[in-house]
Amino acid sequence: MLDFLSQVSWTSFMIAMIMIELTPGPNMGWLAALSAQQGRKTGLIAVLGITLGLAVQVVAAATGLAAIAGQSEIVFQALRWSGVGFMLYLAWRAWVETAENAPASSDLNASFRRGLVSNLLNPKALVFYMVVVGQFTAPEQGAIWLQILALGGIHLLIAALVHTLIVVLGSTVGNLFDEWRSKTGVRLGFSIALAAIAVWIAFSTR
Image (cartoon, one colour):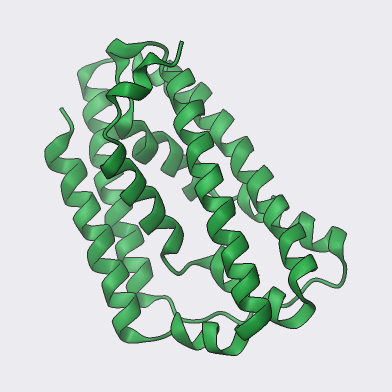
């Protein structure tokens, strides 16, 4: 059922997923600030909310992509170039975004809800699973929706691990971590890496 996994370009996939998760963004900034202010337990509860929100986006993307995949070459090319454009957008955001001072939640339930809702209402997450993760699927290898679920699940695991690391670092050295993600050299490095992924998508997909 999951024979397609042997056809995935795992090196490219893992590099893309890890770089995306390490790129400074809203979840990173909020988790670091929250953990620095309220501790590791609160931060880990927030990670659960974020992960659940992203899981819902994976299912939504898998369902939508399954319907789109049966359409024309025009639709395929539109998705392909949307993936390139989205990666370039992330590269730009990595360059222009600086540290954010997000307010900490007052209790564990609030932290969970904030992580859940913010990712449920984030259209970029849905686009990411459809047009970026979707680039690693192969229609000839079986159901697209199943491939998206499997690859999306792997991304969720990577995201949860990275977010947990952020919580641990944030609760330990919150201020230093916030300064790190504001440094010009760090943001430039992530921007170049994401732009390189966009170029890879443009030249490696059919």
